[in-house]
Image (cartoon, rainbow, N blue to C red; front, side):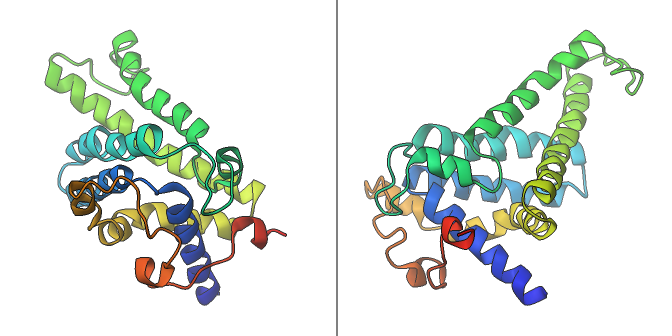
Length: 219
């Protein structure tokens, strides 16, 4: 069971890389995101409020900006897949789901403006610092809720293993991305906007052999 679990984790990581990380800018932003997420992981045990602020304001915004603004949304000639197809088979949050998640995150401070006690859960904020700390607590719930919601959702639309593997992937992505995209900023400084070796030599890129596509897995 453990061997199969790790194999499924490897396949999800490989599909995520080869389908959704062609742009060197996107890869570089993921490197920045990974660094800040690791900082947020450590600070979660020191001050969860600071962890939430860094996680959302730096880690998540840089990560998602790469996908929304720099990753090509045109036909993927290397993988022979349309953008629409990749969005359809995406195991985790595709762009449409990410819009919903980011909208909830961005709108959540408005709840405190409408009700400073958040239905009696908080002491009314009296300063900008109080407000930000309470917003950060809400963002912790939004982040955890978004992770758990999609995990349980995958239990029903796929299977329990797929959901648990995806949750493991998300939680360990900062460690993986740090190693995977550490050379992207230097490549970008050389003027390389797209990864020329993506998918063509996976042994060199990830230390893995090429995995079957999600379409082949479910054929």
